Length: 102
Image (tube, rainbow, N blue to C red):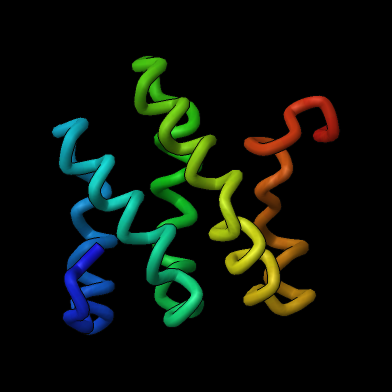
C-alpha cells in the first residue's frame, strides 16, 4: 500500500479525514484503517463513532463502505482492544447485526 514506507505515524491525521464528504478520500481512509489498525488499536478506537455515523448515512455507497470495512479484521481488532467496561458502554452489534439489538 505504501511501497515500503512506514506511515503509521499519520494514523491520527488519517482518522480525522474520515469526516470528509469526498467518497474517494473516504475509501482511501478506510483502506488505510484496514491495513494499519492492527498496529495501533488504541488509536483505531477513534474511528468507531465515524463508522457508526457512516453506517447510518443516507448514501448507500457510504453505508456499504462502512459496513464492509467493519466486516474486515478491523472489527475484531476494535472489539478485542475494548476492556469489559468499554464493551458494555459501546456495542457494534447494532451496526453489524441489527436483528440482535433490543
